[in-house]
Image (cartoon, rainbow, N blue to C red; front, side, top):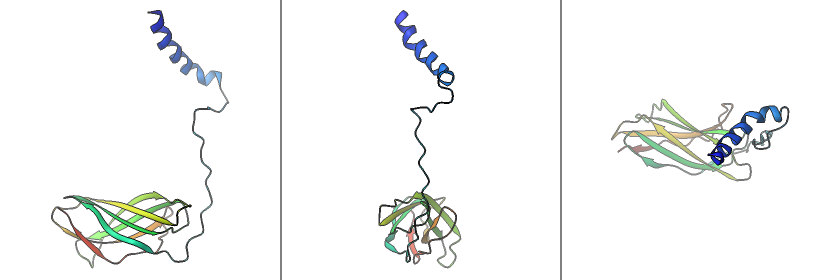
Length: 148
């Protein structure tokens, strides 16, 4: 029974005393925050180099993917899919967060589109934007897919 108390009580006691014993000191086990880098220069001409294309589609959701040259600007970006059942009225929007890799010359976007209807044809275009809402201006031609 003594061994049990040592294994259970001592670690619990250490956890309770940690804030008192190390008040004002940095926790050595806590991850250090990364420094925010200034925005990278925007690329003069952003272009889609592959896609957009349907990665997968089910009865009520789909994933659209595409690749562009690295747009630059802030590291926080979103892939945007604007879609609808009428190619002349794309009124719905889906977006997915992505963090740019400054060391890559290209960026792959994947956006999940939810709330779709079975056996329905959808039309879409893709674009991307910085975290502040500024569009990159890389809008694709209208494409289509049909859910299962």
